Image (tube, rainbow, N blue to C red; front, top):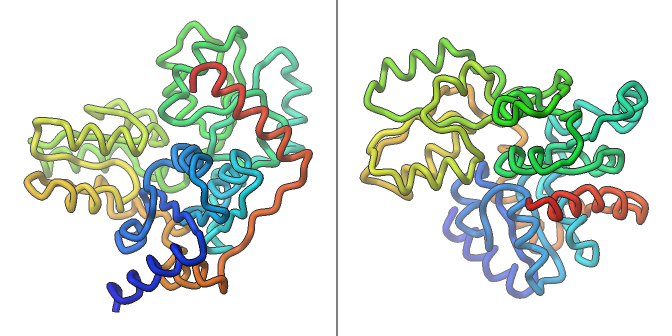
Amino acid sequence: MIKDLQAKILELKRENDVCILAHSYQAKEIVEVADFTGDSYQLSVKASSVSNHTVLMCGVRFMAETVKLLSPEKRVLLSSPIAGCPMAEQMDREMIESVRRDYPDYTVVAYINTTAQLKTVCDVCVTSSSAVKIVRAIPNKNILFIPDCNLGAYVAAQVPEKNIKLLDGGCPVHRAIPAEEALAAKRLHPGAKLLVHPECRPEVSALADFVGSTSAIMDYARQSADREFIIGTEISIAELLQYACPDKRFYPLSKNLICPDMKATTLVDVYDCVRGAGGEEIILDEQTLRKARRCIDEMIRLGG
């Protein structure tokens, strides 16, 4: 059944000129039919280089918006209209405009995991892999980092010369994991390296052998001479790595590291999208496209 549906999807995406993007947290059967897989910004860049008129993002809403920002001429679809991101939606434009008035001499740095609307009132974007580099390159000493205070704390520790202000936001999945659970996993698998995403709590990151973005975690695990790993990010990554490296062993840090929004997309949703009967087209007005894109362009200018 799954193989048959995948075959239909592959045929229809060719017929209808659709490029399929799948974030690494998507289910394996969706990853298998994608043209590109990886982190959200990386996927947006890939989409901007293809000739396809339509791009299907199998991920969450802010990711599809980022695709549209980098490829405004393309028709961009979100695979499941209900796939949002709690972190991206924690702060809105009005809130940050108010905070900016209280801190007028601060450069506002937005994690890429934010809505297009929020990006319009920020100065520069960062990804989890580029955040340290970009913040270090910003001339201003005073930084307001939003929305993830855990990623912001990680950046602040790496760039102590900056005065970084954080707001109380973050990924509810990653930040729910306590240090005690990480310690328990290390006791259960004493020979395993602990690899965690910087969206985890600082006390969890402090226990890790490696801290990095989803793609960086996957690259580290693939290339490492070590044989066992505890994976401290969305549970799909341990599964994908196990398939990719059957001679190694991968253990999820917690059974609770499941993003329900990333699991909102099914293979049937993808099928419906490529046959023109599903998904939601992302529409952004010209002002949002221009102002939010400026935030991303500044990241690129600073080396992101």
